[in-house]
Image (cartoon, rainbow, N blue to C red; front, top):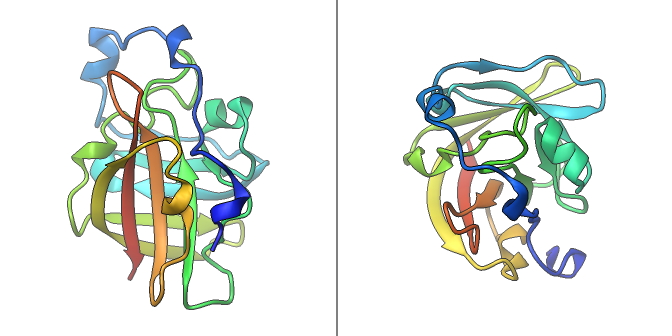
Length: 175
């Protein structure tokens, strides 16, 4: 269990971010391909959302969130040698205009049970997951990063929109 690793789920100061423009919203779901980021521990692809090779940075910082998705420190990696793990990733719902993180997980709530999520490590090995759960939690509900008995999980988290008060969580089990 990772409960003691952090006291609340990653969050940013949404008050400074402008509301998405009509043009930005019209592009949601259109394919977005990302350049290689040398600092990325792995990449994330969610075809259902049109996201391809999103860099995953292994640190919990604003700068990393602006570059892509963060792998929350002290949580598992897909290649860890354990049958039970929870790879915990977080991304922006809105984010800073002009950055990779802008609107990255804006439509995360559109995922459905069975949708595929693929992580790829630096050696090109892929780890496929299938969406099984979608729910909302409060920022202090860090238990969502815990390992669950008998499950090899990927957890994606973003803020709720438009209030940013809670966290939207998507869980996917390893295929």
